[in-house]
Length: 334
Image (cartoon, rainbow, N blue to C red; front, side, top):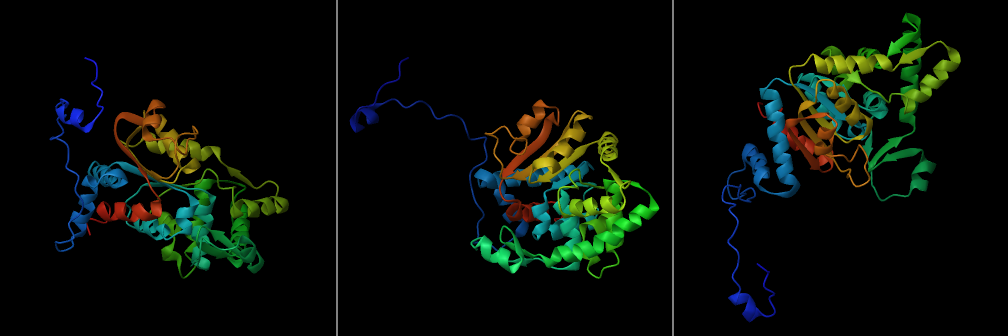
């Protein structure tokens, strides 16, 4: 039947409106009631019925709870800016408590974890002249200020570390290097703040497929000038993470940010026909066809996530929502 054209308010009143679709079975939109005594558990539960990305976060909490309930092997992926920020302390908590089973990060996620044990980062401003900071010897990551001398401390720490590695053997895998870094940083007074320290203590592998893309890589360049036969084997860790995924009965991924840290986890799980659970938290969009912006539905087409897997992407800054995710899942027992 042709749709009637409404030409006036009078026509609209007379128009026969189609029956309302049946939505009674769907959750009612409702936010948290602050009239009651504050309850963190109920507050987080209210995200499910709030709508928009709040409901995606609520779903993410439920998925992570299921990962825990099913004793899934959990891969935690994160980009280096997470370690630049205070999210580093939350990741450290998860590793210390053995709540995750494998870490995948980028070069900055390794080196900045070490640097922060030696010298702190500080909160600055987004709106500041790049030239003025450059002239003062201050690097900026968003609104986090990192003075140049932090990298001098890092260089002083890493050069003898690399010399020690070379004396022990000529070829190292990345996971061996990250383990040895955790062992080495144990000598520093702030070592218990370190992700790598607790990963070493708890025998949790730390993968970094892009280890050379940062200050550590710069120092390896100079190491190669001193010892041309020093090598880092990138291939062995590909086998290691795939074998790690294959040995798991169920696997889950929580990925903060995107890029190589995201894909290294997803690609490994192709070999076991996909993840059983997946939670993405990032702000990348899929309109340009990038892997960073690709949503879980796209990953399903590649066999990276199982067709029946519980999955969600939370479109948000991870510094805002990851602490809430942890509070509602991993830390809820406490």
